[in-house]
Image (cartoon, rainbow, N blue to C red; front, side, top):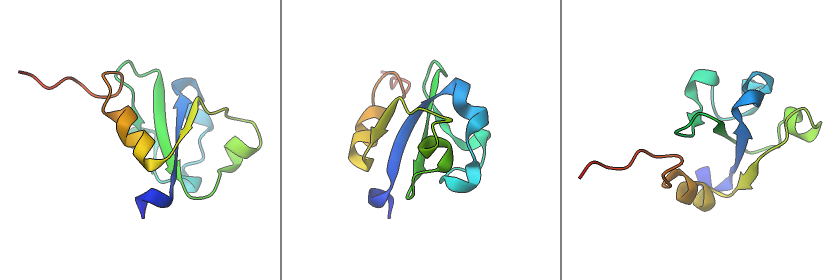
Length: 82
């Protein structure tokens, strides 16, 4: 269930350091990126080794609900046309 996962915001410069076998996304092409493409989000049930060993430092660690709120902001979603 999605609610049991951890959602983590990372800097786009760390994309090459992500081991996609340890997260819910399958490749760099499937991650959700911020509108300005400076950050992206991954989800996982167990802390990936690239985070636990310090290779990648999260910008933010969120719950499912917190991630939904963030994804609804202008930084992560295009405004709906009127």
